[in-house]
Image 1 (cartoon, rainbow, N blue to C red):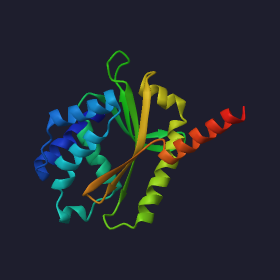
Image 2 (image 1 turned 180 degrees about the horizontal axis):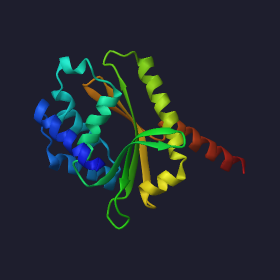
Image 3 (image 1 turned 90 degrees about the vertical axis):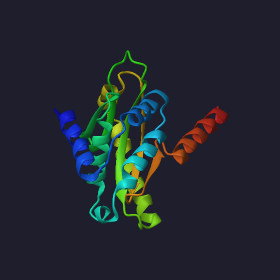
Length: 195
């Protein structure tokens, strides 16, 4: 039932805003996520096919919730993932979960995405705070082993922060944060050296 709701939303976007969804590009982008852990094709296609078509007048009323709804409607056009939005978890509500449909398929990466929205003219500090807040949320969600197992079906999890900067671009910050991953690696090599 929920997928039907999102499909209707995408038809509504196409009808009212003349946003036409090319299924082949979406399918290819989502397969890149599921099979190669590559989210860039999705960011490119969504930016080109949706964000760049939003008028300045429409953009004045945009916020995180509207952007997530648009993305959700877009993602529900394929059967690559089980797509869930705002799932209640131990530590809050996760923005976007992309679960694997079957453990026997060639797809091997499930995704947890925390979405944020900042105005196009937002200061760098505003963007940095949004990213920090989102990473804190992601850490909580990724520690919920029940949800991770449900999404991955025993395979791998990918995660990150998707920041809509106005209606003109999407910034992607992969998890784990590069500086945190580097710190962990440094700590591990320091421990090995000490032993």
